[in-house]
Image (cartoon, rainbow, N blue to C red; front, side, top):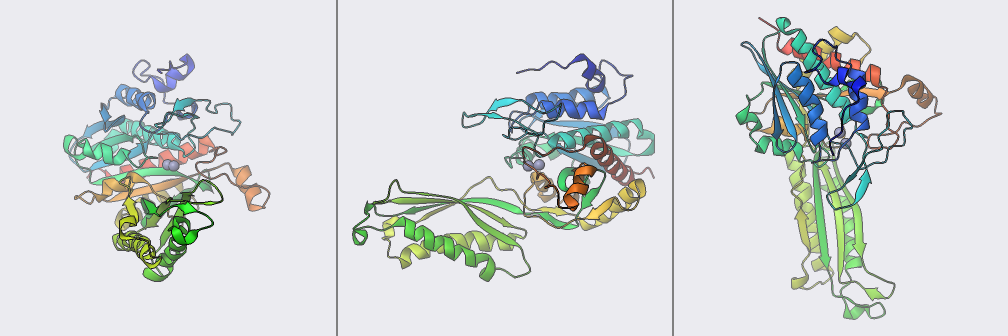
Length: 428
Ligand SMILES: [Zn+2]
Ligand SMILES: [Zn+2]
């Protein structure tokens, strides 16, 4: 469905028709927040930055890897800097009570109708990157090189970066010398920036295990092969992978998030299905965990005397997101530039996480492009103070209550990205 922009917002969004109007990042953000779209459906969302950046003089290509867009600004000899934002919302029913809360509905890939919300702050990312791009356009006498702004679809499905790369992102457009990106964080107050050098987010793998058994009557277990008992043994044995197979200083997670088997009390099922999420940083740990899962499933079935033709099936799904590495040299340069712009006390070194973000893919091509994703604090100061006193709980990302304090969040994000860009593209 194509939505028409309210007139009042046009000043903020339709730079092509109102060249003189200043960019209103708050109005732009609220418009995006109110109109979220699901992964792979970001058509209208992409039209907003496309219109604004085209109007400001960027050369915009739409439809790169789905609804992805690439906006180029060539400004003389110099490095190529990529700024990346993601665009998709989540199937969450917003419960923030904000005047600009989303009431959007959409149809999921499985046909289910759902509410949609920007519960991961991708509206913040789009606004920060658009605002920084516009500022860099305005200040183009202060830098030299090429600015490449990308708006990426389907991050929440781990597919958007892969699809944009597969559609020739670094062949049809120049290969960047540096990649910068921004993600909200729900554990820092608005006005602060979090950063990590090195590993920041994990390899994310999904694994399906199908345990085949021989079904039968619950009272005659000796005539059956019970996949529920096998599942229990497999699940307990999986707990030894992280504790016994990998170096104690290397992080890893094996979580069985779903288990399904059987129909009623007195029937032994002929099948049990387990769904796992597996997290790691290094390729070696990833390989150890994935091969260990297969080994444990197969060997436990053997140990319990399951026949050869009932061998467990272990499938590592192809919706893999690689771990995100922040290039230490780029981080220290970026942190210095942000500190010079934002002052002391704004930048916080934050702990690593085992979440996933497919921004990692751009730094993992053969070119090994140095990448850095910053985290922009979002929590309203009064809520932050209450939480510190133990009187409130902070809603996490993906929560129906996630509500960034927009003005300081957006301003800090824009200034941080702009400062790093001006430093990386400094005119000789
Ligand atoms: Zn998310
Ligand atoms: Zn996100």
